Every structure is written in C-alpha cells, then in structure tokens.
Length: 390
Image (cartoon, rainbow, N blue to C red):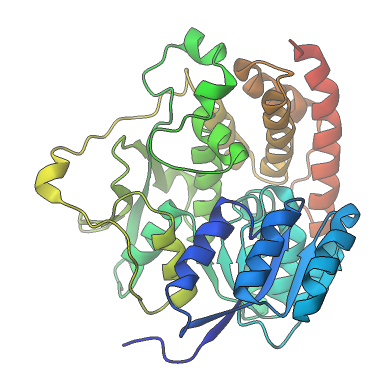
C-alpha cells in the first residue's frame, strides 16, 4: 500500500537539525507532502530560505526583533508572517494542517504540542522534553482529543516500527545508544572534557543541546522517560543498551523470548520520513546496509558511575510526579551554562541534583503545575550554577 493523498505538514523548529532533515526528506516527495507552516526561534536567514523554497502558507519567527526582516523578505511571495510562541499555538487550529512535526528543542516545545493535540492533529514527536516533563498528562490528552502521537526519535521510532502488526505481549523494551564521545573515557577525563570534545559525537549530527545530552548520557535518560509514556511500559521493563555502531536503533523483547530489532545506517531522515508517511513507507535516498562490510555488532551496559546523569534520570522517573520536569529544567540550564563556557562538563549532574533537592515536589501535577515547575527549576538551577562557575 502507498500513501495516496497529499499530507500538509507543519514543522515547528524547521531550522534545527530535525527540521532541516525533514525538509530534505520532504523535498524527495513533492507529490506526497506540502509544507504549510515553518517556524524558527532566531535563525531568520535560514527560515527565509526555506520559505522561499517550500512556499508554506505561513511562517513564525518567534523572536519579535526579527519579524520585520522576515516579513519584508516574504511579503512578495504572499506568505503570512507571524511572531511569538502564541502565534504557533493559534495556527495549530488551521484546517490546512494535517500533521505537526514538533522539532523545537527543550521545554519550549510543550505549549505548541499541547495546542496541536487539542486541535486533533497527528503529532510527529521529535521534542522528547514534552513527554519528559509532562508524559502523564500528554498521552491521556492525546487519546482524549484523538491525536495520534508518532515518535521521531530513532530509538522510539524503532520500537514503534517493531510493534507494528504485533499482537503478542511485550516483556521488555531495549533502548540502544552509541555511548557518545566519552564511552571509553575515565571519570576524571569526562569531568574535565572540553566543549569541542563533547560536541564531537561519533555517529550522529545533531544540534548542540542534544549533542551535549548525548555526551553525558542524559539523552538516554530522557529517552527512557519518553519510552515509559509512549509505550505505557513500567520503568523496570525498559533497558538501556550501549551499541557503539548505531545500526540497531532499538529492540523489543516479547514474552516468548523473541527479540525484534529495527536496523539501518545512522540517518535521522529514516525515522522522520516514517513518521510523516505512517502507516506507509516511502522511498528515501539513504545509504543501504552492507552486512558483510559491517562486521560485528557489539553491546555494553551503561556505566552509571561515569555517567551520573543517566542515574539521575532513572531516579527521577522512579520518584514520579514532577521530578522529571524539574530534572529537565535544571539540565537545560546546566547545558546552556556549559555551552557558554561558564561551567565544566563534570558540573552538569551536580547542578541537576542540587536543583532537584531544592524544588517543590508535586505528586500528581496538573499542566499548570508543570509550567510552574519548569520556571522554578530553571530559577533555582541558575542560582545553583553560580556556585559551579569556572
């Protein structure tokens, strides 16, 4: 079966890593996809270039200081230009949008995702922080409004693909990860790692924030939490497995002992395009696997002593309530401080732990509580960060 009817796509965060790769994949199938909305935070130049090429009905530049530049450039093309996060939320109600790719980075993606869900749009979810901060609220909300949530993260897409057509009971999810640039580094080497080394991921090309999370293995922690909510699995039934070759993107173990894996060369366009075309598959000019050339595939357990961020994420998920939200907020502040050369790489887990110890715990948070928790965590994390300055 093939996708017959064109789908109209909104890409929230079109100038980031996921957004640009999504547009590359979409460009290969102009007969299947229309781009209706593009949004960016600050990268006005690239947003203008994308709009000139894909001719969406609307664009949003979140930074109001850049509105005039974008509006002036796109006015001759009759493309509507808006500014601010609230504009994105308002546009989610548009009848001309079939699917929303949420590729904004960090907690900022939560509000537009909620708006898209309440509008009943199909969600191609690349913003993992949405479920990390509010998974217990978002997934029931998606069910209530009839909004399908299709994962875009390579690991969660792999699990999603492995589950298609299955009627068996799942025993365990196995989330794979490359181990990042410090897989073989000592604890002391990791603690004093430079920004350039932390940004030098061995397998994936990603934005700076996600790359730093991958270096600390916080990304695996975020993915663990995301998987818990996406697939309604108990935390103890989700296992993290380090797989340096990044060929197996994740696995599902069933109650008969069988394990199903999804494999491909590292290329984020594969899960992106699968989400946009689901339940169909469409062609992609990706590199095919050559199994004899691959040689061996290896697997390791993650070291929680060398990578305490993963341990913190596991503990936050176990605690429940708003603990994962406060962890996420603190991590965003700590990563930003590291990227700004204000703290050492090894200070990131300390800032997160210190922040969480001071935040107000809420056992059953509402969505308003989640927004408040994020603000509180970021405020406290900013104060805590001052104690870790280089």
